[in-house]
Length: 304
Picture 1 (cartoon, rainbow, N blue to C red):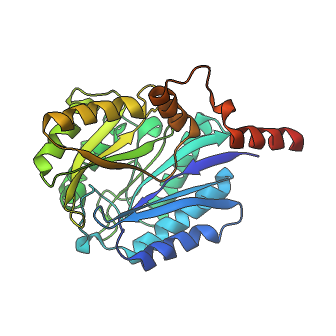
Picture 2: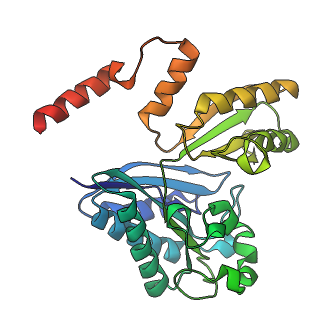
């Protein structure tokens, strides 16, 4: 079996009927499994995790992008999370018997199809990026939907696929092969956004923080608190517990408590094993010490 994972992000987190209709497009494709999906009304964004054979996942992603184009108009969209497209980003992650090079080729094939058939400009990012400036998703997204019409007109930001003008309602989309990413958020017991911004700056890479952390401060209006929202792009080299401890220390310096944290979507088991190992100071502990993992490994061996 050959498996890839994709975690497309859609710029809708309030109209759950719209999100369900996008999810339905993936359900129609044989060989695609929907592992998880969640919506955040403050960010006004939904994250859907699917996996399956590469060709099946490609078909599902195209159909979901088509449905998002039909149902989401960014001219009527607002939310805390930066966005540039109705289907904002489509990452492809090799999981089983698929190489990174194959995922890169698939991202180009999908991006070309979205650009030509849906007339949505597509930018390749991360491992698929065509130029160094396009490796970082945040660099591509800078200016967001409202300012992309002028950005796309420059030679530097001509899209990799599709028209050289922004789609009037669906914006632009980024597609690319990348490593596992953990969406990790930490909530603070204050409504002062300036504190969240300062702490986010202290941990994000471009401001001198951790190499594999992207972070922003957000307000959660419904809870009257603020959040440090992070993308952990390499949990092996920058583990969750290390970033959490820095945030905790910085929050205490501002006299603010941490009231909770969350992982959006799915996470590799090893990332949480590393957290348990760090805080419990476990000796000779690995993921093989976990009962459920041992059982699944045993079943997999029997089926071979």
